[in-house]
Image 1 (cartoon, rainbow, N blue to C red):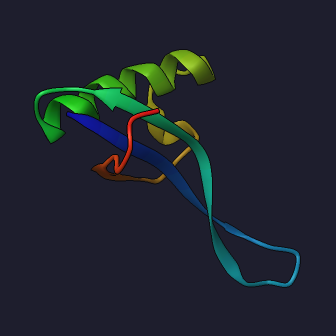
Image 2: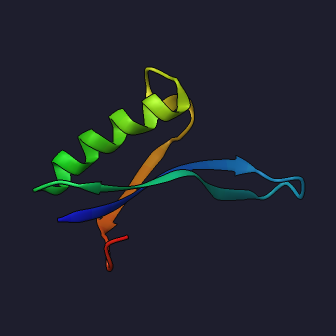
Length: 69
């Protein structure tokens, strides 16, 4: 199964309103959603060169990919 995993962060824009910004999205192949989440967190940390994904994001959205890339 292929999953689309988005790492999101809520930030305040210049207009004073909060908006959700996608920091990075990944497509992950895994047997389960929970395994995809673990793999995506590892990939995100490696790509961003951080130990903890919450350094750059405050939540994760995960869904089944509609079409493989």
